[in-house]
Length: 566
Image 1 (cartoon, helix red, strand yellow):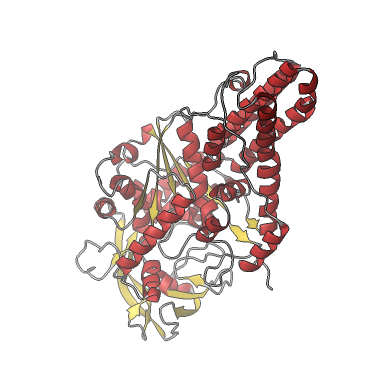
Image 2 (image 1 turned 45 degrees about the vertical axis):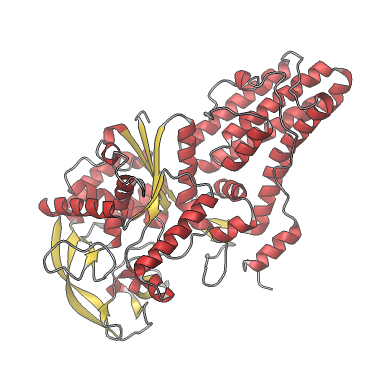
């Protein structure tokens, strides 16, 4: 990864509703952790995201809420912004796919595709609801998936088996608007992206990624190619969206899955509500030789980002930046089942932040990230992880070291003692673990990174346990001073290493030990890092960083969020 710029995007969350923990760990939080890590490493980073606002999800949501669709999108855009701010997601800009900037770039890309012969008009058969007096596009129609039998499949994709569908394939179809089954198949004209004509180019582009992309992601892309690509409809019979700039299409808009990925580019151009042209978006999107592009998303979004979106960019003939690494996540379930806001089942992000600090959630989610297979959340496991890892291992180490120092030397790092084989052994072990941790973060192997971070914390506890400063201080004050001074430097190192995962706690720890310096990823050897703070450095009185979660609280939360029934 020797490119100068790092472009990072999270899959754009649908505007309707509110994100739950699965959304957070599926695309948002891992991207944030990587962005924070790369910034600390000194890289030029652009991390953008935004609400995906077009399509039937918005229209259906607004209809149910009794709101104008634009007002509905305004309301939920603000809700998303507030939730992500509470989780400390460090977007450089959080925009919207409905922006004028995205409209401009969507039209630009469409016109180039059309000019190059990759757009075709086809007359198709589509579901028409007699009772609703309209064609039912995508999520306006629900039914049973013909491939897996899931009875709540949408008209564009089955979220259970991830198979991309056409509305006419659904069994026992019904209108999402009214529930009506009085449906007819009628003919209508639409525009299609000729994926068939781009298949060979896609295959050549994907081939080198077999050994660099996660198996989950590469296998999904190859499955699509092996099954043979088909032309993909890019227009819909809707009112909410970008109008199609073609005669005869006055009552149609672009399909949300056409303009939504383009939204990454549009949001980069949008950049700021106050200064919409401040950032030079072309540096990021039209000079791929200078950019390393990482995308983060759940596995259900992978086909669109490995096939449809790259094909869209290729068809323009322009040298657009395309994804270098795609981090696809499996699903996080709630005690083995699905999250459901309507059934008040599971933890949604707005509820989560009211129950515990953001860093509790950030730590647990990254430690249990569903990287290669699905993970399941339950409160017992959550409490056990927070209690053992954060409270017993990290928090206890920091608290006992600072308390011991205060009781023997006051709020000042003590002087005295020379390195012994114990310290040299510690340096070697910390160097080894720090190198592994850095490597895992660079490779986006988050669960391995979290395991290694915990090992780093454990090593600090082991150092204290082996050397027993509470005993040493009674007979050899200087040796005791050396042990505590080394341990306080470990605390500083921990704060730096955990900053991408738990930014708030990292800042609290640095404030506790009175460290006010520009944060950079610790690249020096441990012999330097663990002697960075010198004797005489003042620190603040120790305080508890974490609170244990009691069994009673676990049971209370399990009942409240319907993990168990009363």
